Image (cartoon, rainbow, N blue to C red; front, side, top):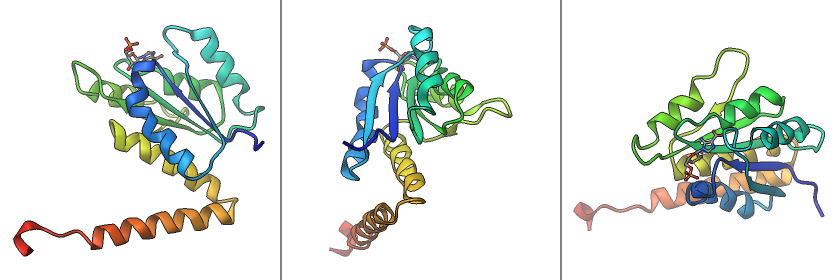
Amino acid sequence: MNPIQIGVVMGSSSDWDTMQHAVAILQQFGIAFEAQVVSAHRMPDDMFRYAEAAAERGLKAIIAGAGGAAHLPGMIAAKTPVPVLGVPVASRHLQGVDSLHSIVQMPKGVPVATFAIGNAGAANAALFAVALLANEDPALRAQLNAFRAEQTDAARAMTLPVNA
Ligand SMILES: Nc1c(C(=O)O)ncn1[C@@H]1O[C@H](COP(=O)(O)O)[C@@H](O)[C@H]1O
């Protein structure tokens, strides 16, 4: 079996609706990944252990999704040199603006690559992880190029009611 390359973590199982879009992309590209709930707030010791072990375990990137006071991506980034891709999950009361601000406003020196709120952000975080891996993997690069070409064809084929 291929060693796990990408870790997907989220603060709660309630984030799955969003984070499944990251997982779907990783599956589509055949990336070996793991997905689990790890909360900085509710299970800080587990979160520290996960982050501390990530580099040695060979993870190439960690996609971390959380909502509200979304400290998970930043706290993981504080404990590992492995690149952390943060996904703001839409929150019930503030629609994810709180999540976005919590993730994006990291202090200088501890970066988290921050994506858009919600499903598209989750998918893009996974595509970004694929792009990172593709730097060292020509077959994966070809797969990514094919994905992009399909997307271009689909956009070119778009029609509008006014032209029908
Ligand atoms: N932001 C965090 C963290 C964290 O950052 O450690 N742990 C849980 N949460 C978030 O709390 C929200 C509500 O969680 P529940 O639905 O379990 O109450 C979720 O979006 C989760 O990411």
